[in-house]
Length: 239
Image (cartoon, rainbow, N blue to C red; front, top):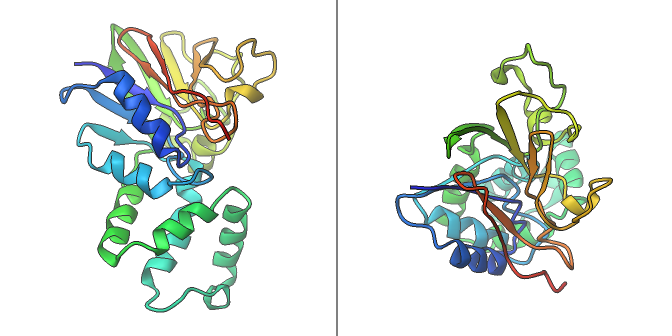
């Protein structure tokens, strides 16, 4: 029984399939996804439903799922074609922000789904966890999409806001806990200043960043086995 964490998939269903084949998880293994399954890539719904079919997968919420949920709910509730004119002001703002962050492929695939499949996808997103505390290989881990924004050692995890957990980028050179490693995504490792191995898993001061830019040309989808520390990578995104 092993525990794996997969980085930000962003609609790259082909890279997800390749990575799962490389991992070769058993039915008794547990796989966490670190958030941002959807958006940007060509087949976000394909990636989402692939994971939904795997009972040993535990998905965590990313900022892209957070942005998507209210708009997808609106789309799902419409019997006819969707128009921005039908939306209230707050929902229009939510759509505008989401569109700037790569929503189009998710909207297109979701809108083409039959009603029951839409409902299943929405339920899956709505039930995603904000974080997970995991013990594996004799070590303790905290899994969370972005990290612990506004970190204070006195704050219990339950006191962090959704924004702090899925949007704010932490200081990766700061160790938060003496005996717990934080596994997160959200920031492609190509964008971490001073990273000598961009596009690969980044480790610093108890932080393990596993978003390796799967949705960008030259990026790849990554996973880590928490029991052994072994890293797994898909082939590069050819763009």
